[in-house]
Length: 193
Image 1: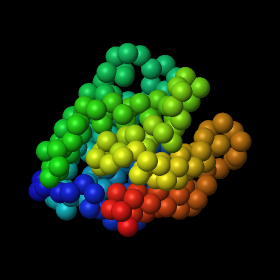
Image 2: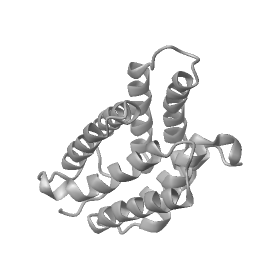
Image 3: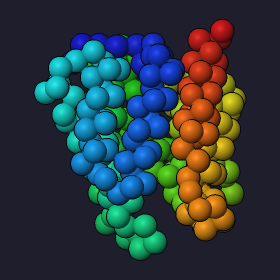
Image 4: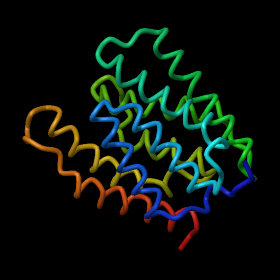
């Protein structure tokens, strides 16, 4: 992989790939999730198929394990997920012009996943947890990531409504719109546009 400034991304392209990943994740189609991660990393880093297999594998492994152990998470599950996230961010750090604190970012990502899944167990809100993770990833102040985190959280709430039986179908077009708004706002914020 060639080196990249992680802040240099096409927000609409990232939002589209994330939207696709969400669909596969919630459909429990983990192989398609992996393939979408491959496509995303190829697009983001401009690399060939084989150059992105390992980071896609670690990201998919973490997400798949987290989804499969829902409601019965063990300490061993959490360690396995955290190790996969750490391996993922270590690879990304090696491909970034600005090294990342991969262990810290991995822990923050797993934390926001848990805050999202079990909001009553944490004092931090989902928006706050997401903003702290994004701030660590892009080396900015968490306040710069609040709008991103808010739009992302709004998209997650639409999924929550379906999961809790409040609505009969997931509003995927609205989720896509909110993800796009989140990444456009993140891009503008971290570039002070």
